[in-house]
Length: 552
Ligand SMILES: *[C@@H]1O[C@H](CO)[C@@H](O)[C@H](O)[C@H]1NC(C)=O
Ligand SMILES: *[C@@H]1O[C@H](CO)[C@@H](O)[C@H](O)[C@H]1NC(C)=O
Ligand SMILES: *[C@@H]1O[C@H](CO)[C@@H](O)[C@H](O)[C@H]1NC(C)=O
Ligand SMILES: *[C@@H]1O[C@H](CO)[C@@H](O)[C@H](O)[C@H]1NC(C)=O
Ligand SMILES: *[C@@H]1O[C@H](CO)[C@@H](O)[C@H](O)[C@H]1NC(C)=O
Ligand SMILES: *[C@@H]1O[C@H](CO)[C@@H](O)[C@H](O)[C@H]1NC(C)=O
Ligand SMILES: *[C@@H]1O[C@H](CO)[C@@H](O)[C@H](O)[C@H]1NC(C)=O
Image (tube, rainbow, N blue to C red):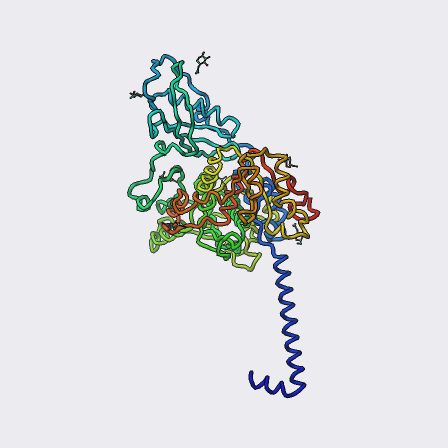
């Protein structure tokens, strides 16, 4: 290096070369800055947003022929959002709404309130029916009240459902009520505590005391109704008499969640069409766009995101490891023996080009689809393309969001007493891309939001802002007009003391589970959907089109 510069300084030619080189270097620097700037400007992080839940089927079908899911990797619609009408309740469970009036009581206004007295529950029912009327809450069943912290207080637990949720799932609330005796000798509620304030009525944990995790748990599990244990394959004979459809892992692994669902439901649909049990890999790989590490993360569990219990009830599935164990056991049991029923027959299907219709008559115990080709040949959903689409139907109703996530949704909405309005503010990459969304950035600026929202949402209402804007203080201007709520205000619900955190640790075998980007979007969206007035970005805040300029 030293020698070169010495000799260069001696000759004009050398100087020229140095000049040239430094010029080149500078140009290269300028070009790299330019390239970097251009990349920075045009880079669009995936927008984790669901704009219209109802549109999923059509929008997925639109992107399908291109074999990519680049357009809308953010849709978060699952079966419960697609059901046109909520399933009707069982008649026995809805009568709780009507108060029962009891007669013939002895009047003694100075007597202590007896929470076990049926009149106490009756007063609570009348009160809640009045307060929650118009808040889309249906009361399903009450537990007998128990004494609160001081005389005159009763803690009452009940189950409810939200009319805005299409699934018929029940959630739990327990509150503290203050009761008094009126001159007419009836119990009357004078005040009601906040969501889940009646801690004495909190349901005791049902799980077995031998459960080692139960001892380590710092909080009690409120929702002990979830049963998403993996069903085991019983006897060898039980295994042998089943008929299975087994998909090897394909190119969909670690792709976006929409592609995952679209592919998974194709497999499930084919299994239904073939009248077979679908062998299911509970291992989910979360794509980089949703992880905090910015890398694809495998080893996630289906049950973190979706309702496995509901899936078990609505489709015939067997977990992959259980299935393989059953298969091995059968092989061992029949090895060397004759007349025990023979070997398991497995038909290997190397390509998606073998259609479900061609497999319909196959009597093999196992149909094993292998997806070994290069992308996009190895995507599961290709099985359902073309003519097969007419025969195989994706059982959307089998996939619901995880009840554990919905419990968080329910708690957030509950903290606002189901009395809030919502605005969905899409920003992120779309707001930065002025070519496709010329007005979005200015239409979702704090000043524009104040102006537009004041026209549709009354001042000082609870306002839940569902958004992909990462800057927490972005919405501060709205705080002088509304009680603003953001998802991050509720971090304790998935923090390391939360019910959710503890339940997830049980699922993952003790390892802490991160509340990841996909869960955030799922919860944010569902809270928004429970708001009374819902202000959407596209249509309501801006005239830009959801999918870019000239697409609407
Ligand atoms: C497939 O991609 C091309 C180019 O991106 C686009 O013009 C076309 O509309 C897409 N087709 C479908 C069905 O989305
Ligand atoms: C409270 O009411 C229940 C049911 O009516 C009754 O069995 C119980 O004896 C009462 N307790 C007191 C302290 O009055
Ligand atoms: C008591 O009953 C009378 C007549 O039924 C009614 O007008 C009055 O409002 C009742 N008082 C209370 C506190 O409920
Ligand atoms: C959970 O469901 C399975 C059947 O899927 C059942 O065998 C098991 O007993 C249930 N566990 C609890 C705790 O209810
Ligand atoms: C589906 O399979 C079950 C048992 O595996 C059998 O009982 C039933 O008849 C089959 N249905 C059809 C339509 O083949
Ligand atoms: C819980 O999280 C807090 C803050 O993130 C941390 O300081 C604390 O050590 C954690 N506790 C446990 C038990 O992990
Ligand atoms: C949002 O836009 C839709 C469609 O134009 C309209 O039906 C709805 O009333 C608007 N919502 C509000 C809160 O303005």
